[in-house]
Image (cartoon, rainbow, N blue to C red; front, side, top):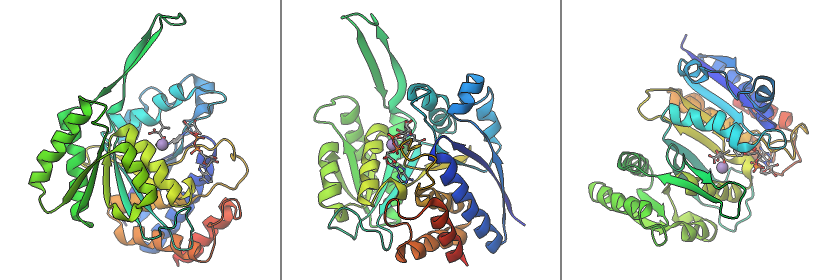
Length: 347
Ligand code: NAD
Ligand code: IPM
Ligand code: MN
């Protein structure tokens, strides 16, 4: 029997509930399709930091390297550990170390879910650059605490980094509706974003079968609300992609529906699957977190592992549940009830 080893990092807050939910669904579908998933749980989180002084142990990255994939809930408990410590101690180093440069975030309405827009027929695939750009971590502060203080946060865009994410986007567009929106702010940021636009133009000549439009990020943000059906593949830098995908989640009906895959396209290291949302401290421990985003991310994991039929069955089961009105109204159905409805629809 085929077997896949999965590193489970539930993390903080609702991360624990939604990974448990997704794991229940994944184990069931694996059994139905005749393959095995072996989960190894790591308690790396803000609580772990408070106990040990680290978000993950020394050598944590090397421990994860041996797995076929990683399923992560959410990281962050800002009331007790600053986000700058927790995210830079766990989530962001994994994305970087494993060269998960393509962050894929699909945005479409699930059957039965009513989003806030009049538009219903949108199907957007956001491809977010995931390892450099505005998240380079380069910078510093001088004259700290004085009136002369200056803080610098340097964005780093490399030709290799920009070219590979755009190329990834073009390839995705080829397997979809052959439309690509390249997102910058080249009217204001005259080095990195002009550079990005230039590389977009160069690749557009190579992918002449794909219709390419360059948008400024502000205009693209408005377009996602006003005319989301006009978009197919959207490729954006790390920070712009982060913001646009919360808009994407919003037009899907909420953060509880937005899935995310941090992909290492070369397969030289494991890829990581997680919802777009965070640890939601405001609803943690209430048992009402929507697990659909994480279940859907789990389906993306199966797809990446090559279990495409099982992946399709999971997304179908999610939609069978939402079509019946389960998990469609925030707070109405508990996490467990949504999970059970999806599991029941798998058979
Ligand atoms: P958040 O995504 O955790 O929450 C934003 C809002 O959406 C909250 O009102 C929350 O209740 C709601 N929400 C989120 N997920 C939901 C779900 N599954 N079901 C129902 N409602 C849901 O964003 P935030 O409040 O800005 O961040 C909280 C913490 O999470 C911070 O520490 C932040 O840095 C971290 N964070 C982590 C990740 C990650 O690990 N990938 C992503 C985003 C934020
Ligand atoms: C996301 C999150 C993270 C990001 C944060 C928590 C660092 O918002 O995955 O969308 O910005 O990448
Ligand atoms: Mn985000």
